[in-house]
Length: 258
Image (cartoon, rainbow, N blue to C red; front, side):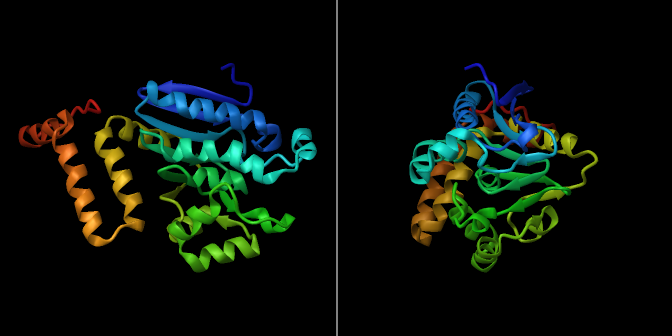
């Protein structure tokens, strides 16, 4: 696909997808959703970690309300079901670790696309905004799923009803994101984080993602059974053997992702 609204780069096993409509703060239109879906699905074929970030001063300001296609097509249920849902599932189900490197404002659907990643790293200048109530809507694009799980029910409800900006520092304190880091050196920081994941035991990462996510619906017995099965799978990998050997030989491991 010839991308017009995003950029993709591959660096040492890391695929970096940049939302690239900086003139509208990387607002989402139908073309961007289609391109992003394609890029997220294709990236794991060549990369062992995936990063989403934004060009300019914003990560993503949400749905492009000035988009003529949006104005003409007001069937929000269809848009969410047919365009956002496949994209969110592609990010959530990505077989390699995913990072949202939130470089600036993340609002509406843009905030919730960021939260779909495994790890969210934000610059201190970034803000998260569930802006939906300001225009008579509810949080969508997975917001009603991610928020209570990451920051707790009370804060999720306040974020939905008051539609007030949440600073990166607040988001980190509340458990909504992994970390907030100084603006200076932000790019170098997330790049180092992504490189570490790309060089890691990616089978173990995938199994950890599965185990943690299923824990919300499992009993203790079910979770222990799942842990044992997934750990058994990890124990059969070359990466496990390499990790143990590297530990015994007191050297850094060289994982292959298998």
